[in-house]
Length: 283
Length: 280
Image (cartoon, rainbow over all chains, first blue to last red):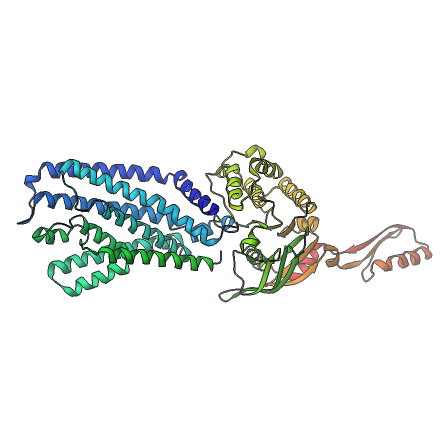
């Protein structure tokens, strides 16, 4: 445990001293300002919002702008998770940073778990903070609250933790650049699958919907995101529900407990695979 | 007491490249062993296996009786890699503190002060690594390897970036450590350094030990040189025990003797004979 704590602190100090936090905070402040601006004018001109027939304009505007904020939150969290983990093994080994740590009696598994905890310790609070800040902005400007407050945020945080784990796993096998590209492509593939599902839903194509669902489960980051989007309008029914399901950047489909359990199992499997591979990796 | 480092039948294959082919080597308690060989001979691979960075394909390596790479083995060793880096934003003191924490050393500030003084970095205690010269970083690397008072020190090219004064500092440090019972495996290209400090030397070529022993054992007779009133003459085939007889014969022949020296090969000559002029 002593070694894990030391490596977690080492990872956090690395992020702090490389000014990662400063850059992220500045970009986040910029995003939140723009988001406030968007909310301010969208809700001020609510009467001008052309909601589809039978759909409540405030629900429509609130869930759409907040859905956009959730996508941005996920995206920023994913970027942060990737940059904190892409070079954790191969990158640090190539630079000669890893070897002095690995030869200490800490154990490779402790070292990798510590790097994951360090990355997740940054990304998860960050995602939750941006999520709740966005929600507060929408609530104050538009007097609109999502149907579920906490669960969607936790699902976004879980999705980002999963990306951090995938980044670590990839870092065991790939160089930093190759790993970064690979994880971004996996994330992008998930988003495309979500969009395909939306198209399938709009067209009533069961094949497309099934393909999108399989892809979302193969990449549970997307499944968690879809469920989180679905949760913010969980109590909405009828036409409004149907329209909101087509929400921004992918469909909003309730996956429920099954998705969360699957994501947890997936995370455990990714971590186990990373530990197994790292234990056998020549440095 | 088990050897500080024992390696037997050690082999390592990287894909199609056979880096080590059944190496046997032992570093005893308080012994300083030099590892020599051309680039690609397998020296770094051997050191990396000893400290658990690389898994052997065959054979075994133990540190103080514990399997290489196990926590029990890692607790006993200090390691300086050939290519290493510390985070640039850390000060020298913070680097040592990090490694104290990882080794579980309770030496605290006193240990850090002692180690920085040992490698002549006491004045750079709070200097950031990124502001240090390569030589200073290498000395900091040696101090880092000594955190927790290891029983075995594995040094991979520890003086490659040092100036002559820095090399001398490290040489004196190694001699002091040996005096304190620390065992050292020194991987170096600097034959003169190895010859000066090492108790034993092993020469690797293509992943196999081609020569091993003390520098004296490895040195081969190169004849006897005698200076007389007629000048210098080298008796190429003569050995040390032949010198008195040759002197007697020369004196009997009326020659005046001014000097006699038994010629042996230097470590450099031994090395060149062993590797056959290979460089990589």
